[in-house]
Image (tube, rainbow, N blue to C red; front, side):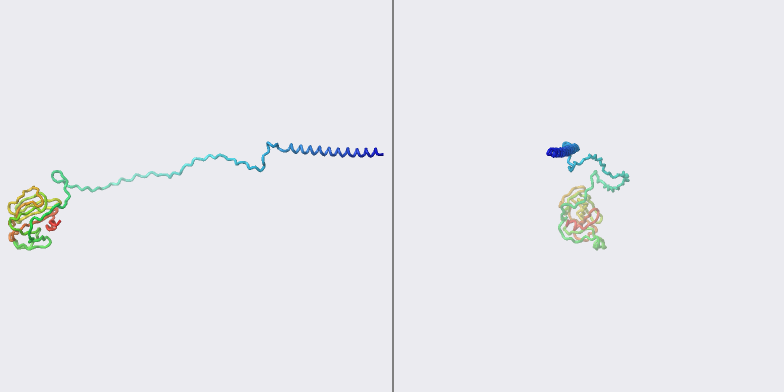
Length: 238
């Protein structure tokens, strides 16, 4: 009676073991298949890893600067300049004319009272000629024979006997000035083209002027600048 129970129990254990073994086999097969499907550790790449950016080399094209178009300039018409040329005449001997300058030293031709003033704007009465006329110089009173001096250095231009003003000496000075000494004694102490210094004796007071014969002995002294009559007093003050 116990024998059939043992067989039944043995049969039951055998069936259970078979199921367990079958289950384990299937499990092992499933695990093996799973591992076969997984990639090897060498081929594993983290799915969330950031791939380095791929840099594609860019070849920069050469940039040509914009150059503004330059239009050729039209040739300018030649400008004719007018140059005014002043030609100065040379003095004899080929020397250039000297720019007028005032003489360096000026002295009075003699000391004395001025008895007749310079008068080119107003007429003055002439006692000798008994008329009204201009007076181009000054009359300096002095005794006959009083020495007359050159008012400034220069060259004697002329020594002459004037019909109205008597014995007259003319001296040229720097600056375009000329001084004239009239009513001198008939024999002056200088000659034409002679160089004289300021204060040098050129003659003496005389009584040779017919136009001023009624007056007491005196020197008639006159001055010109570039040919124009000027006041002798202004010349002596310069």
